[in-house]
Image 1 (cartoon, chains in turn green, orange):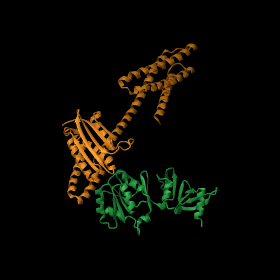
Image 2 (spheres, chains in turn purple, green):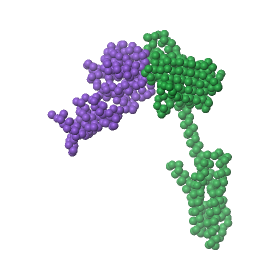
Image 3 (cartoon, chains in turn red, purple):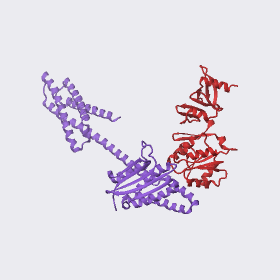
Image 4 (cartoon, one colour):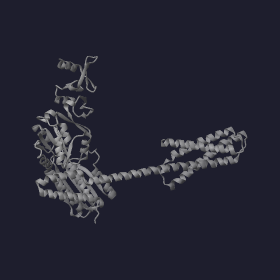
Length: 230
Length: 344
């Protein structure tokens, strides 16, 4: 499994590298001292796993993750920091504290999902933050994306986080065979559509699992019929 | 029940009861029977006047409540006597006029007692009113004192927590662990620094002031440790006039400023920067300045706990003679503390 170490302190990276030496399944392909370096390393190496410090100069670790189209697996590392710890508390993300206890590191690594080839391809997750709370979300678990001005509200499970991305921007990054632009305001996950009914005005209404109804615009209704009918 | 409604019930109910009692006494014990019907009207008028006048007294003399007792008592007494006389006079005038025209008996003792009753009842009202207000104010003052004490305790606790900054401690320990394999000699030195810093922090709340030399030694060790962490990202310059060395300063004062410069300045800069510590003396004052590369974060954000604590401590120790300012100029943030010079 390819990993990138991200920490602004060289000695902290050195220490982590030493501790990871006993884990042959984790191969360190790059190190980064800040978010910009990390982005370049992630682009160049497409790692499966990040060891990520939260407190970094310039951009924090959370901001780095938010900026990525797809998030790899992440093990957060942090020294005692009440604000960072709070973010973990509310979001139930896994983290290890520095100085790292070797047994705790081994446990965190063993908890990672192991895929046949590259877990990154199988995972296809994004990192989303709304206020104090953050989540890793499997893209195919997002049932609906709803535009609210420059923001977009995601519907997944019981959560409805609002993220600072326009719907158009998100549409470009989503698989068009899974996500369908229903109208100016909505993108729906076709995997979550339970049934489709025709409204009085001839437009289609998609009923999603969980009961949310999304009206398709006239034009998109036609497109929906064309592309999805037998 | 709200305070205002309670007052109105007591005020209106009290006066009505008092007048009813007076009326009963009048009916039972004066020889004049039956009581002339118009006299009931006189009593009702009496109650209304009393309620209105004492209520006015309450509204118009609220500021008297804040006066010391020595300056308040004669005002209340005078106002009370005036109102009491007016009430008595009203009874006499209304009752007297009616009796004059109807040719009824004119019982002198009844009118004299009306005057005495008027003054006496108004005095009672004022006494009860002031007693209730005073009790309430006393209770409020007690609550305020408790809150103040709680806030002070809170501040002390936060101060204690800030003294041994866990973030710094764990980062320091992590650095030392990495150094153990890379540079064992440095690691050993770092452990010494770390233990000195801890000892100084833990002991610092026992003494209100230390010499600047002691504080500076601790700050130097702290900066050495941070240099291990930040490596080439942290440059340090220290310039201290020898005259300052023996001056007395609150423990951890300079330390707090330097820690802030690292935490809010250097740690946020990918390329790092410099921390400059300067100390000088003159005009019976000491001036300590800690400058760092960087910008002030959003000025609308309230100052961090470190700066707030520093200001509170300075205020407690020196009153208005000391000051603590944080400004940004020429790409630098400068924290300046001015203290009165105290020597051992």
